[in-house]
Image 1 (tube, rainbow, N blue to C red):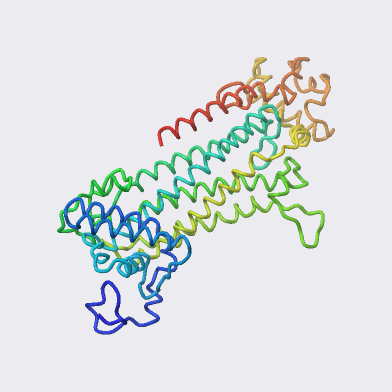
Image 2: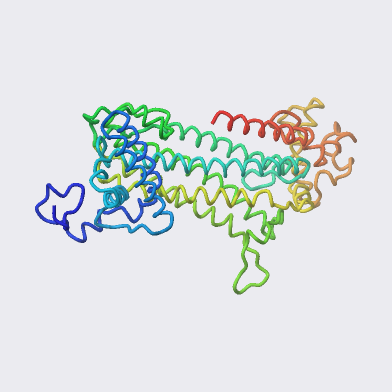
Length: 467
């Protein structure tokens, strides 16, 4: 084989690949990120081949020692990556052959780059999911702790971004936590489908060598080998599923980010973020910009794009493997990096949120947030709800005219709308009375918030136990 066609498939060709085509089709510039997983898979493959008698023990040891040395070269930044060798697999195999001779060429027995790369990506995704799991756990733990601490802190609850009813800050934080709990379940459920081994499927039909795929799967920590060789080499559902999880998670983080941005503004003035999570303005010295939540909000569209890219990549592919699948790695790698970094930022930032309790309380006093409590009070006194609704509406109209909240009106002012109203009405018109009255599971009463925080903590422990 000439140097110009010095590739794993060069014997079939009578002329070298065009230089531009070589660069255009090469993936080594980005798939070298899979080097550790590629070596891990190769060591397991060589071990299995020796176990079934395809390699001798001496050949196995030479391969494993050579691969271990190559891993060291890569980690030290000494490895020379070559575009003509196309990808991470052939770069490592060529270096192995340089180091140990013809034995290095025996490593590829019983496998193809098709099942090799599918295995590498799954090993990579499993590792990254475990890292993301840690960061998501850390964020949830910090959020639960902050919610418990702020179980009595009153703030306005909103619908349509209009003041609706008073809630506690702890209750609001636990709403965020519920979003993350669903995301966490999706992540760990995705991991189950990632942890299936394609290796041994070879190019598409399996191999004639007497391989033992169960041994290889056990060596690599997979739950089982893939059932069908055609599907195993061409499946990228697990990548799409992860990116779907990532999109939903980033949608949730973006919603949280939007509220953090609003709450730090002078108009809301609900919270303060420590300076380390903010930046200033080059021209306006008074500015303190919430850049971390803004950037997380912005990165959401980026992850959505990766999901659409992977769906589009796969939508027209016939079985089995196609070169199109080379395009799966860059969006997947970026989605992984984006999710991990956004979670780390949030896990660091959320426990450091400082609520401005007086501002929150004052905001809850505005906007007639206890109007529903007055309606409920009237219903308990025997008034039909629709009539109570009208009475409260008239009371609010009076309050808008006189610039008084319901709790600021005198008993005489309230009685002009209904004689049923008595002195005890003020027990329900206070913010404290309003939130305390929602004393049921899922409600905003401080005792319920603390109980919900305990349940959330227990559920997180149980989820981790299952995983």
